[in-house]
Length: 276
Image (cartoon, rainbow, N blue to C red; front, top):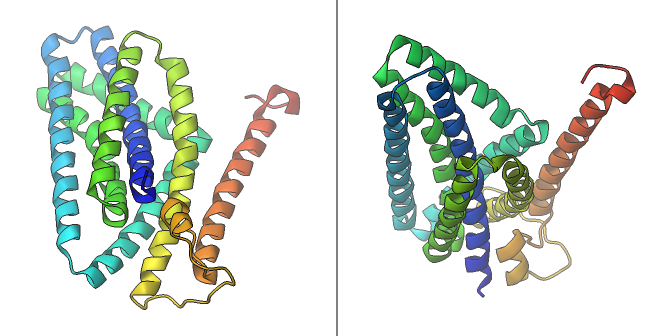
């Protein structure tokens, strides 16, 4: 399989799974809160209506942005890819960091459930609609941003295939959640998609730095080895000091974040003498 297509399928599929699965978990929790508080079916339908509206809005934004990016002249597209790539990597790093700290889903879940209780208590259908829209829209805009980097750098075909595969996996995971077996699934999904996202982020920042070198925005100091199409397509590895430094910096930040989490867990464990 072509390296660009394979990379697009893997990256897009992982993004759809991670972002979509988080939205499903939080929506499920919000709906459970509404049902426990005795809210009627109209309230639950309002949340789902908001979620579907946000899904369609995010899809439209993603398609529109991709169409715009692909219509740009080649040199402008390279600059666009570099800028969007760096922005996406910054967002990806915070997503990965939050996943390491186990607070990204937990804290956002708490905010959503609190808003669900408040909206149900006030009988606000609009508030519940906006709740569903916010949950899915938040993940949808992140997804649209990440997908732009894949579309521009690896093409539409592989990206769409990855989206389709990711959506198929999401349907399976959603059915597991609705059957009450989502706990183990959530742990597995977040673990493996985090690993894929780290590899994806390293490839994206390497590619973004390379594109900025192509348009003359970043200097290019060559290493001794020749450029490999496979390494460039799969991992964003190019024979220049600048791209290597960008990737090494990102890897160092990810490792530092992980080590910080492990130290925090160790200090909070009963063995260390503090409360967990």
